[in-house]
Image (cartoon, rainbow, N blue to C red; front, side, top):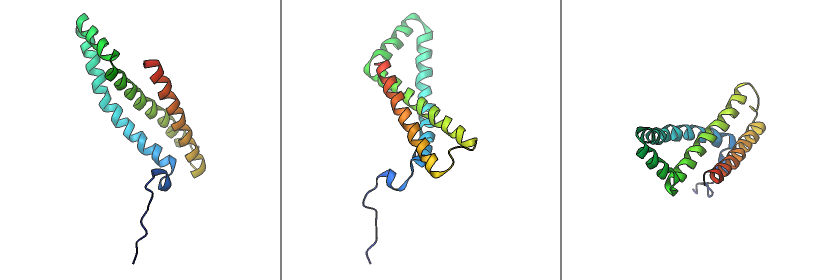
Length: 123
């Protein structure tokens, strides 16, 4: 007996966009929580002395610092945008399958544009 196994494991083929957005919303919340450790350490260093401020400033102006800042802004913006979508859904809108998937795709598109704009602004 031959088993029918999925050949294509593309996420969108068996999971709707609304489910992907919901899962990534939770992931972005966890990522942002741990990213706050970096933010708090950078603030602490910058507030200790003028030399600490210059050190934090030089770290943020380096390539790794910019990538970290963009990643933090990406997590924050995704969590905020999809969180607003969830709030609208809590009010009784976009709960149907079609409108829920459309709002998820729109939220992800807005997030991509936001991250690109933030990346251009930071870089």
